[in-house]
Amino acid sequence: MRVMVWNVWWRFGDDWRRREEGIAATVEAYRPDVLGLVESWSGDGTDQAQRLAAPAGLHSAWEPATEPATDHAGIGFGLGLLSRWPILATRRCHLPNQQRGGPTPAALLATLDHPRGPLHVIVAGTEWEQRFGADHLAQCRALAALATDIELDGPLPVLLLADLNAGPDQPALLPLLDAMVDTWAEAGADPAAVTLDSALPCAPTDAPQQIDRRVDHVFARPGRPGLALSVRGAFLAGDRPFGGVHPSDHYAVGVDMEP
Image (tube, rainbow, N blue to C red):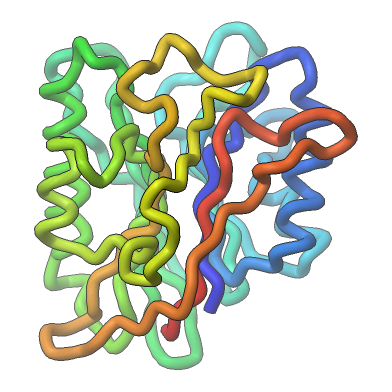
């Protein structure tokens, strides 16, 4: 199966409608079986996941990650999921933010009706500001605990599709690396790859801890002890302009793996 994650940069920037065309074209070209969307929008009776899923005949879900942003009134800010298989259930799982305070962030936990059994998928984005580093670490620990919950045990891997705002060499990821497999590394993909590229005109220069690092990840753990993970390859997508506009300030990460 092909699993992908993409921080699609909400409706930020003046060209969000043109960016949306590039996002849709990328989904059409790569045909993911499962795609997690971070910084995804909802509004006007629909949401980005639904809009992207419909042309491909995919199922979708969307959950708010925080309170709606204010510069587009009535437009939600959250997490989306596209799936080849029906979505049996979703749950919004709160993440700790004692240091930052304010609205509680959340992850999306979904159970997919895969032919071989329930496939559990977590979609998430973590704290990015360096001054809230305690929250960042606590959120990574919470995601590791969620992903390793024995209630998610079964015949299929548990997947985490997330913008973790850290590269694999940064301390915040240690709880997840202790609990799960970094499928990019498991595939033997380029260790120097980045998903937040300073070469992009829309690169977030106010995020020095994340820039020019691989901060977007597909992590997995076997459904049960003793089961193996089989990762066949990994790649970047959305890393070229579409119609002269980059689809997002992040590149997508894709992994081909056995379910």
